[in-house]
Length: 434
Image (cartoon, rainbow, N blue to C red; front, side):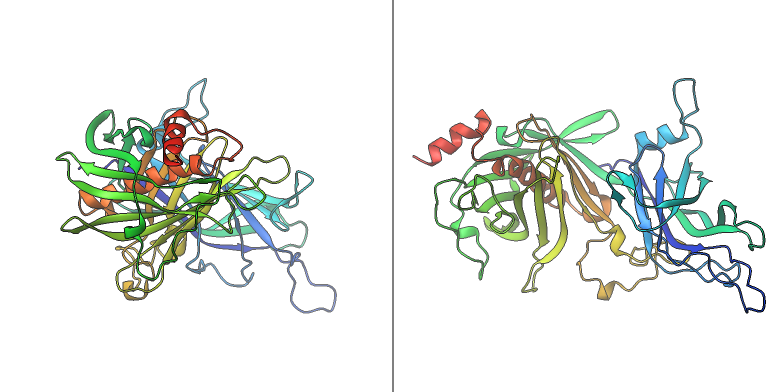
């Protein structure tokens, strides 16, 4: 299997140094003009803006940039993103040299009545040379930059921001379902414009009582509104089963409602072959329907946990939500959990100086995987990206493919019970309830 080139741009070691006000007559040293919290908005090209707190640094700390080890933002760039960022500007496009844009605000993050609650202190643009970033890591910037204007008469200078920016290769395997998971599609590996069959999926219903792990709670009894028994088996091209996603806890409407609630989620087990036709639990996925706030639509909430051998408790890897109406990405990305060294390398990465022995998440570090799914009621053909470091064989990739299928099907399983399922699932459900 050949991976696709990706690059991740990491921003960390953030610190803000404010200009010092002149001391009053007869007073001692100057003081900071502001003790309010500050934050930054960080943008790279057309990627979504990321907002992070900016800790204040002493004004007399010298020119040495602080190395807090904290990661502030991470941007993941595909080959298409890199080509867009490095492309020549034109009359119809604003693209040009890749650059990181940073805006610094005083005040707390958030907004009031739709208006940002922060006061803009200044902004800066850092040019980034991403050529060659697919092949080797590089520190693109490290040190202080000036943001905004000088503080005024008597002030020691403009506000300054210290940050480290690093780019490093992050190759990934990319897979694409050529149909909806409930239609038992093929799964293709994608590399550039080339696509080739890698797996096949078989959707169906099965008895899952024998798949529960020892000590797991038994299934809830059937209670009227429920969706249960779905499974997706992933086979390699020889026809051998290499991964299985099985719905082990039914998706049941909470009493008095027509929705699957967070307090009563449905659940899948993701299993891998254990030899002699047996299956071994690898991970657990719980899903429910989050109620949208004022003017917002509902979303699919999820929690993903790893079941490590010899560990008597599940290890949480991801918990978030996906908009139910328009879909989005399920992601397992542990980049933010890793400290950044002075040079900008994640401390728990193979290139860092971290100690793996105390890392609580097994062999999973950095970007692990993502699955892009469509919203409820739409034709969904998930696209799966898996970090190369987490795929040692085809079975590893198949487990993530099975997980992506479970996420996609959960969008339907969490659909309001007052709404009909799509025809591919509704006839199956009617057969099951006879």
